[in-house]
Image (cartoon, rainbow, N blue to C red):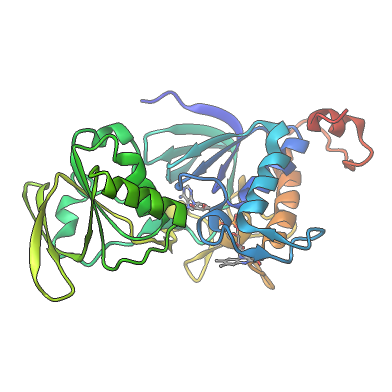
Length: 343
Ligand SMILES: Cc1cc2nc3c(=O)[nH]c(=O)nc-3n(C[C@H](O)[C@H](O)[C@H](O)COP(=O)(O)OP(=O)(O)OC[C@H]3O[C@@H](n4cnc5c(N)ncnc54)[C@H](O)[C@@H]3O)c2cc1C
């Protein structure tokens, strides 16, 4: 069995609420590990609206989705949390009082005193394109994310989509692939213009192909892809020989495994919490941010920040059962200044 990672607190979800929880826990000397399925930190703000403005963060009249993520990263820097990206928490099991064993889909195991669920709307899942029989090729020849660039070296790749992910991976994989084709249903893109220009340059230099159309069927055997059959807008078809298909059609949010961890749930979707501590019905497991429910709940970033502060007060009692917690202001406490590195 994999050697477990032992620490005080594990935060599931690196959205704004999970990030701010690192700060509140750090002020009280609790070390945090943070896990997220996505390949970046910031949850909905980073994935769904990085360029959009947010106007209701207290004391900050205007900030973008990416801006708040960058600001939170700077704020939590003194506390040195460890981030584990592109990993989904699958199981949470009580093994002590309180001690939890948490496992991820990549085989990591954590032994942790306190679990904080900050999983937002759940896990982001890739949208599956409507291609008959695609399931038979998933994870062997069809991939919705790139975890290891090297696994695509010397392969014939077909990337499908017109957004940032499709364009970014086209640019990143082009130097490794034996042959790369980008397929999109129209000639307009939703991706950053700079990426589109770079992709077009590669096409101009004969390094990759760009083709218009939609995949209508796949051909291959035993989960190994040999070709994609592509339909043009005039109804005619042609084949593209390929070893791997990478469709990037965006993401949807699904609750994922959270509901099976044994806490009381509201409508099967939200973790019910006590509003004095933001603890779930299972002692030692907390829920903050969009994933929780209590009377009057508002799905706002500022609510999740408040919830993180109260959560940390109760978490302290599990991590340091024999110590008394003294309330301190960041403005005036020299011990907090030392922790923040401003002393
Ligand atoms: C378009 C848009 C505009 C918005 N504008 C505003 C606004 O102006 N003001 C405001 O306050 N709010 C706004 N919101 C809402 C705000 O973004 C959310 O309230 C906030 O993101 C919730 O933060 P969170 O940390 O709880 O969850 P999220 O941001 O959803 O992050 C949760 C993270 O948990 C990860 N995760 C889930 N399950 C697992 C698992 N099993 N293992 C590992 N990781 C997991 C997910 O990948 C995700 O990254 C807006 C939302 C949208 C979509």
